[in-house]
Amino acid sequence: MKKYILIGLFIIFAAFTKEAKAQIFLGEAFVGYNICQVDGDRIMGFYKKGVNVGVGVIAPIWRKNNFSLELSLEVAYNQKGAKQGKKYSDGVIDSITGNPITGEYDLSLNYGEVPIMIYFTDKNVVSAGFGLSYARLMEVKEYEHGVNTHVTATSGEFKRDELNILADVKIRVYKRWKLGFRYSYSLTPIRTREYFNINHESLGTFKQYNNMFTFRLTYVFNEKLENLQREEYRYTGDNPKFHERKLERQRKRMARQQAREERRKNK
Image (cartoon, rainbow, N blue to C red):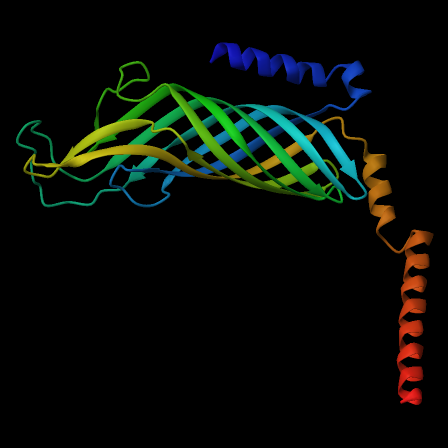
């Protein structure tokens, strides 16, 4: 994981140099709010909360008229997991551990993550993208029925490496600020675990996957505001070309209407 983070940081650092600013790279920083669950853990609901924070670099790779394609590379700290509140209060005691069975569960998974995304952008305002990410498990905290299971990132229960598929939508809300929504799902299982009922009878073995929604606020550092202003000017009534196109559409409509009237007279 360190190798991937160092590579990502090197590329992002290059985006902030004067040479890169003069070329095509844009830098970004983002902070987000995660709502998560783990599929396969017999707990339903996106009750676990976390943060998504990091930096990235954006490289435009194609542009035509008001549409463009951009490639982005990020380095992020991402919190995932699952959570369930207390379900049982009848005082049943686990015959093996001697602890009360409450149904409480809290799993915190902290990852270092490197997403690679490709975005399709319309008019420099709305972007939709998809991609993949590699994540490395850094820290684990797990509590069952309110008791620490003492599972760690290196104890072997959880897989250290994770591959995710991502889908993302973001919209420019003010100058260089963008508000986004991202969905992420594990392509590889994070753990395989056997579950038991209250009588310690096996319920089966299940593969588990991270399932997460993220709301993000992004700031683009070295994006030229004059380019954004030109784009806005291009598609508003302040642009003389806007009025010319409007007049041309009116002329075409009048020509079509005259042609229809002449066809009626000739019948």
